[in-house]
Image (cartoon, rainbow, N blue to C red; front, side, top):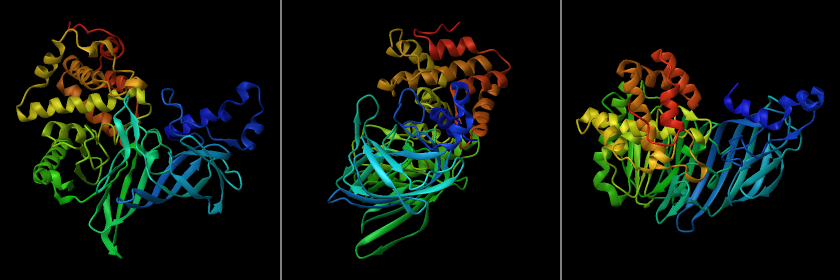
Length: 464
């Protein structure tokens, strides 16, 4: 049973009926509504309960001149309770039609929730399909407490699409929380001359008809919705393979065409190196997208990290590619554990500095530690705050936690731990508690004091 199944069942109350004095037959035979959230207390309306998505089949058409998106989303899922209705996350766009198992379904809208009411209840454990036809002008999310502007961002020649933490709902209906991972197919039609880039690999060459070009992509490995992309533009593209044989796809906006070869080479080289440090690369291809939208950030879109409006150096490329292991393959179950993504990727930057001879991780660690009044000491990174999710502490002090752990247990145990973490939870999820347990098991040491000081307590930890 997947983690998504455990949480969503608990939310519906069906698993706990007997303990509340209700008879078990009543709980299992009556159709209920899936919960309006997946169970993350910090983001209570993100995701949805009652079902677990297996696959998204997205057929999309976008016209940059009108900024209009038309789409049909096919969703394969399994009910984790008897469902009379369930929700999908969708922001703003107009829904034309919904079917469940091929039959017309009723729908309701409230905020960013699309409620689907099947013609007949869905039985617990039943596989089912949903098809949603929709369209309109996508509007990104603007939230200073997260990345700022994210989701589907229209640009002059296409779109910049980076969705962390909950921006997938700006361009397709789904279960928009990292707890529910699924595979994806994309079929994207755009005006001739525009390139459409999505996750995974192209399943067939682009085809052009009547001034429109269609691109087909597939990500066969389970992916969280915030890592999905359909970035569009008049890109320069380079493809090939890394020295280790990993297919590599790099695209740059014409404004950054001068970086194409550099970013391509660095992405291939760094992917190969992390494959030696963290274990085999978990996906079928690697690469990068450099767009001209001035996002001010990069995002680790699965197989296609995206860089918004800047020329990425090797350090930031190393960060985003480390996420392919820590954040993409091994995903978080709840946003409070974000340090498992960002602290690991930040520490990977320091490891890349060690590898290239720029600076040792110890030097970088000490440079941060010797700032006694740094704001990172006031924000314990082990519980990321919903109104300040991407605080620098989650990155820097999260990375410092890993270096303190490395010094405590030694290099042999530390790098064994990183590889075992990436392997044990490959294509799945992990929590802070599970990482601490594994660190203690691999090292044979009791580490509560170390993690408590670095992750959960305010103040600068003592190095002694």
